[in-house]
Amino acid sequence: MNSTQILTFLEVAKQNSFRKAAEALMLTQPAVSAQIRSLEEEIGAPLFLRQRVRLSAAGKTFLPYARQLATLWEEGKQAVQDTEELLQGNFTIGATSGAAITILPRLLTYFRDTRPQLRVTVRTLPGDQVIQGVLEGQLDAGITYQIQPIELLNSQVLFYDTLTLIAPRDHPTAKESYFHLDRLKDTPIISLVPEATERRLIDQLLHEKNIHPESSIELSSLEEVKRMVREGLGLALIPRFCIDPIVDQDLRQLRVPGLKTQLPIVLLYPKERYLSSALRRLLDDIRGIHPFEDDWL
Image (cartoon, rainbow, N blue to C red):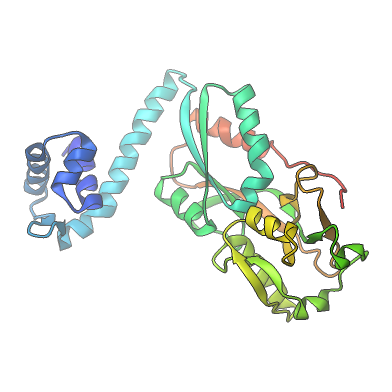
């Protein structure tokens, strides 16, 4: 059994096709078939059903172990590179929409100016996909609002956010000094879609206070929410750090007494996976980056 066989097995399992796996691996189809046959002979059982290519019972059993072997292979190569002090690398970070707005500009500027040897890619994803991506090794780290601890991931609070109600500057509500919490019961608000991490957190906090506001519009990103508020289509309750003091000067923040709960934004990374020197440096750098803070209203 060798790494080529394992990687070939994983690609065929992913594609459910020998031909597509061959294209992805830049091999001939006979070469892919030969790798799989050799692996099956060594294991002593067929790993795929051939007519409509899909994993056999044995293949399904072997799949998680193959993923672990592939991960160990990559970690071993990285460990050897680290011994040669090659502090370079390509890293992918997943972040939810709200967390990305908060930390992304400063994060990417920092790495461009101070760590040009590290190539950092940031993907904005729903919270569940951020967690799943880190668990499966598709993401090196994740940044998201934390709803609950994840057993297989390290979680470290980067900073705490709060909620704020926003309105257009010319909206009658914008003239008020605060917005009473109970008024949310009768005020339709512009919201994120229900599956968004930020929306789930907001709903959880409001439900604890027996408040179930009606959503007049449901959108996929906080930037879209802010745009609809600018257009005068309603009010919105969003994380405060998502407001940019320069770009969002046409929005008025309203204090909502009773909504002072702190929302943790956390850095997620694997518990039981080898962390290269470059990745450890990356994580240390992220821990040192904080959003802009001000008293702008």
